Image 1 (tube, rainbow, N blue to C red):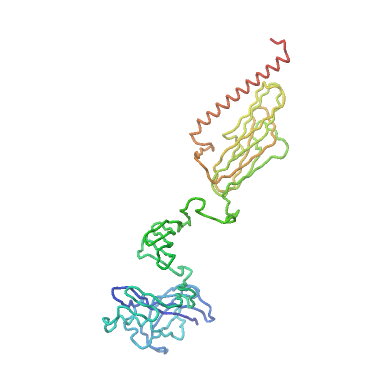
Image 2: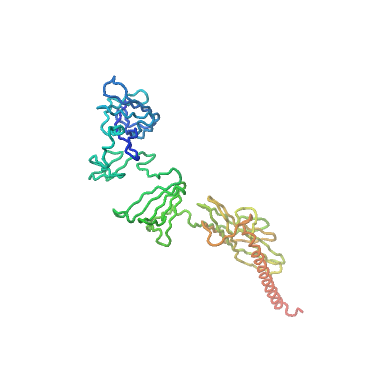
Length: 446
């Protein structure tokens, strides 16, 4: 046997004259025999009788199928499918019977108290004698307005209100719904005033055209804002303030976990023995970095290169950073020693760098070197990766080889020209030094 605790009240409709709509709102709590609340859809059949006897005739009945019961709480509108007759409450007493899921009768029947007798007003003998205003002791009707001067609290959905208006509702629709009087793209709002005359305050407004929740400043005649906007679908937030005081957080208001999209760095340094670089492409150092979001990785690689000159043998090697581990990519750095260099050991630092656009995830980068002639010895190799989530300033689009777009071709040509001029100067200086050394060794040479 199931049980129901319920309340019943008339639904009033505003019209040119007071008229009873023939609807009764019924709320109840459905429990099992042990008193535990029940949830889920259930069929509820409601019947009104003239008395509580088991064999009493039915005056009216209505079936509600699939009623949503949430933690025992449910509500239905009696008369929504089978209208309540005007004469239904003309008698001295009426009793409500309920059957759950077609078989479980709720006993005993519930006596309907005085509020639904307001339906009788629809067939009053003389509406002309009805007063323009009235009172029921709690609520006062004055024209189109209704107000209460009671000192206690008002509860809706609860019998134990703890504030002026205490509303309890379902988890699905919430306790309170504020809606516009139009069905499409209208605004609904809730005004919070600073004092009783409502001159100034703040207004929460749901913008039906944009599906945004907005916070506005408001006076009687003006709106200011919106100051804050929240998108309904993706939760994106926009704050309209500017300057350092627009959003203020405490000193410890952002944790390390919440700053994963800040710049990050990864570094790898070769600490082993020196590496011999000869006629193929070699991975000198590799390093991986995990990027929390799309952005850019700046790869910077350095090494000391040593060459032992002997005889007339030249040396030529290329260096680059790449996201592939087998091919020297552009831009690369070429280090060349001509064959006429004096015998001995030569050391030079090499630095190469490149900017890579990246997506979220783990990416591996390589410091590569390769020789076309002879061989170099490398030591103090290092590869540093710096992740930047945002590009500041103008950023060129990247071509397929990872270099900047066509507008950088002129820059590349200029850099190559300057590099060739530098090499020519260095070669000329080296030739002059060789001639000076020869002159000292062979003073009698013509």
